[in-house]
Image (cartoon, rainbow, N blue to C red; front, top):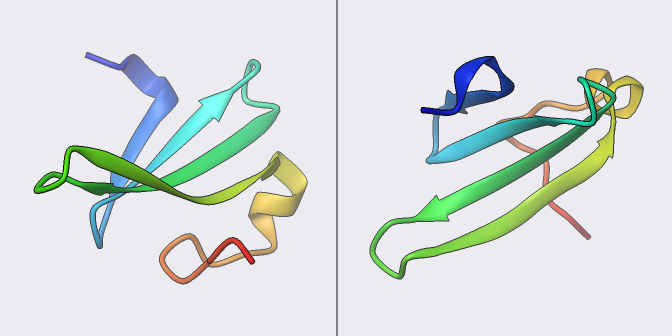
Length: 58
């Protein structure tokens, strides 16, 4: 459905490749509440420096 621009990882987290793989968006999906919580927004270089399963916006 999303092609190769989305990766589903553990803890109901989804990584979106945005802008031709230049940026990353990580969200946690709450299927119960039909909502997404943004966990990370940044460049590909910033994404390489974080753990996608543990990152929190803050």
